[in-house]
Image 1 (cartoon, rainbow, N blue to C red):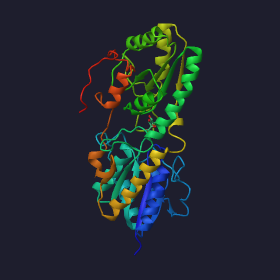
Image 2: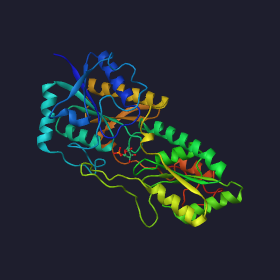
Image 3: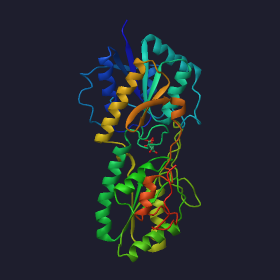
Image 4: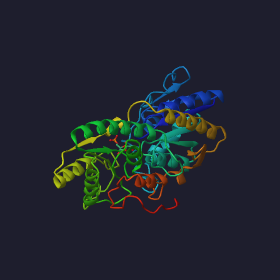
Amino acid sequence: MSKRIGVLTAGGDCPGLNAVIRSVVKCAETHGYEVVGFLRGYEGLVDPVSYVSLNSNNTTGILSTGGTILGSTNKGRFAAATGINDRLDLDPVLLAGVKATFEQLNLSGLICIGGDGSLAVAQQFHELGLPVVGVPKTIDNDLSSTAFTFGFFSAVFCATDALDRLHTTAASHERVMVLEVMGRHAGWIALYAGIAGGGDVILIPEIPWTFDAVCDAIIAREHKGKKFTLIVVAEGALLPDVGMVTQDKSESQKQVRLGGIGAYVGREVERRLGKETRTVVLGHLQRGGNPTTFDRVLATQFGAHAVRLIVEQKFGQMVTYNPPNVESAAIIDAIHLSTVKLQSSAVQAARALGISFGDGSKEPPFKYVEPV
Ligand code: F6P
């Protein structure tokens, strides 16, 4: 009887998905498995079941490409709210359909590549007794149990490039430039891009901030002769007295869409300081395009480890990166929200450089705190 592994990509896409798929196919072939790729995320598992046969010929050349050759969706019948705490229990009829597909295709295992919501769905399959393993993906880098998700550094690379570009024009025109980046409820992209791109103010969901402190930071720079300022704001940062800035939620989406805070920040800074300010929303540019070298390597290791978990029949596990090793943890324990720790080395280094988090915390010398 043939041995067969299924693979699918669910939720929002990110650079590196194709690298995982390629890795899964190559490693599965080495172990004597054939591979089928389900289309459009979990939707391909049921009614109508839609999949393609994958092999090392039809996956050649995809290591370096963005997006996913299998398609993905974060809407529809399997759309889940964030993480395990918020999960939506799936319709039993739908689950029965998924089970039937596993049986009809005689799947030895299904590799679900997804973020917290998508892996909460994989957990439900596992609870049903289906042989699944998870591979974490998201540009947001917001999953517990893994130091990094692939896609994150590609997004940071894009946001850093945007800051490099904003830097030169901001300096030329002595303007304040506000760059809004993604990340949902975590400030990882803003923090890393802010550090890599020489941001002066970084506003993230984890640190409450005020316009007074942001304006003080801009004025302090002016006093030092620096007539321009780069502000990086995470889409999930909390606008003082308002909270999260959201867009309309479509009927088919379970998660509220974030975005729009950059415009508020730009307008208010300009109003208070009378300084010319421009705002850029990076949007989906940071989710598209080719994966960075780091993300290719991480994605490849994740794919290989996922196949290994299936070969060893370690189901219900999610692949994790615990530098320098790729390991695994139970999905149920691994998909809690991971946010920026205020005492982390990155935050402390940023503060030591004089980067403001808009919280009025003093510029150096300040007290270093041991990371926990
Ligand atoms: O979770 C990844 C992410 O890109 C978030 O950073 C962002 O808030 C969201 O997805 C955007 O989702 P959509 O593609 O549905 O607009």
